Image 1 (spheres, rainbow, N blue to C red):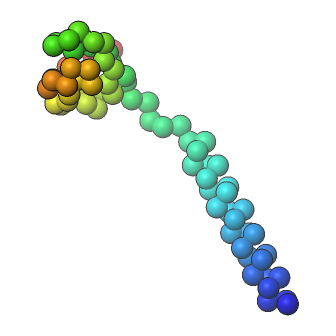
Image 2 (image 1 turned 90 degrees about the vertical axis):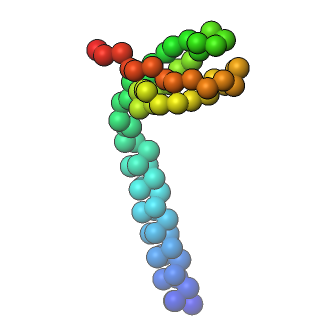
Length: 75
């Protein structure tokens, strides 16, 4: 019976540690990345993209045509 008590205590302690780790990781702020806007050259829909996609190929979700994300505007 004592070994069952120890197992439960250890399992509870591990659960508390894991819960604390989750809270700490969720509290971290992600690195700020610029969000840019532009209009699809084919259909004119306003699109948003993250700065790391600048200059890369993509597809418009409305007209499904290929496009290249423009360079992020400099601040």
